[in-house]
Structures are given as C-alpha cells and as structure tokens.
Length: 281
Image 1 (cartoon, rainbow, N blue to C red):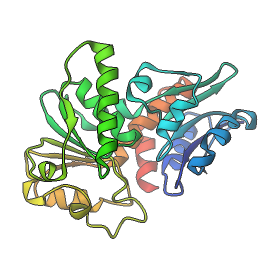
Image 2: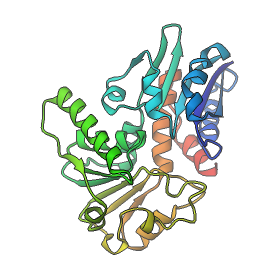
Image 3: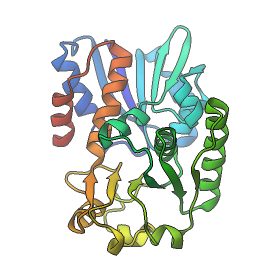
Image 4: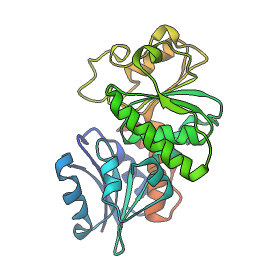
C-alpha cells in the first residue's frame, strides 16, 4: 500500500482525508493508495517528515503551519514553490523530496476569472498568503498584504518582490497595508488566509479580528475565505448579506487537492466526487 497524508498542526479538522479517499475510490485506486491525517508539532516537522518515506509514504499535502518548512526540507522544488517560498505538496522518491505548490492554481480555479487589474487585499502572511499574493500579482492584480504582525507582512512582500522580479523582470504592484488603510476599503477582492474562522476561533468576530469594515462590502467586492467549516464562515455569511460575492475554502481545497492527486497518481482527478466528499466532511 502506498501511503499519502496531510501534515498539519492542528489537522483533525482537515477534510483532505475524506476528499482524497473518495477520489482514490472513484479512480479504482483504493487498494493501492491510502490517505491519512498526521498532526506534527512545528518543532518535529523536519525530522518526522523526512522519516515518512521509510514508512511507506509516497506523498503528502502540507497545511498550517508547515508550508514554509516543507520547502526548506525539500531536495528539489517546482519554480512556483521556489518563488512563493512555501510548499503544500511533497513527493517522496529514491531521489529525495520534491516540493510543489498547488495552492496557487487552486485559488485561480476557485476564483473562476482572471484577476488582472483588480485591487486585492490578502490577509495573513503564512504559506497560504504567500501563494495567494504570488498568484494574484503574477496574474496582473494589484496586491496589498496585511498581517497582525506588520514585520511578517513586510518579509512576505520583500521575498515575493525579489523572486518575481528575478523571474519576470517586471515591476510588481505589491505592497503592505496598515490596519486603518485596509479597513478603509476600496478592494475588489479580499482573500482571507488567516486562521480566523477555524476551530478554536469561532467566537471571534471576523470584523474585529480582521481589518475589514462590513459597511464597505457590496456587490463590487469578492470575498474568498480559505478557511472551510461545516457551512459558511461568519466572514462569508456577513459579507454575503452585504451583497458581496463569496467563495468558500472548500473549492480551493478541492482544486489544490486535485492537482496534488494528479502529481502523485498521474490520473485525472474526479472533481465532483472530491467536492461532494469535502463538503460532507
């Protein structure tokens, strides 16, 4: 049996095992591959992940808070993972560990339209935020990044600006934004890459924890929340009530997970079965 997993901390809430198990069954690969969730504390990530191939693992998805660490332990990486500075997909072989980033393509598929010319606000500065900012600016959006710790937002922007400039030679519309400026609005797209809305934060008011003014949301705004729960997150519910278009994290999960499965199996992922299983949990 070839083993696959999602690595995170916490990870019990992840819908990847149900989603990927449904996909493997639909492809007739359930007797060849298994998929599980493994909770790994940050301090143990490198050691435990590097030991996975000896235990029969051929690949792994990586989620909060390990995406940057996943790139660091890789022997080789895709151009996207290198430029983003984070990885969400690992493949194990005799040649070593290969890191890739399917968050970027997953976000674009979920968005469903080119973001060129859009002024976008990315909330957060972790691996998912790096992928979101890189994807949007690569597609011609003007991107501003906010984080509770401004230093991390600055670090993200400097890193992406350096890698994109080397790759494209073009000037990028990429910068940081303060809390009051973010709350002032004017964004056509808002992407929540923070943990607000995840288990353990349900009681937090997203419009107090995040620099968003609900009065500035409306039909001209798209709100994409990478957090997924049993139903709508509070952020999406209230944004929708204000008339904003909303996109939940399930669709991003499905799309990035499908690309990971394609990498590991070489097969075309069954999107409908994956989407249904992810929504059931």
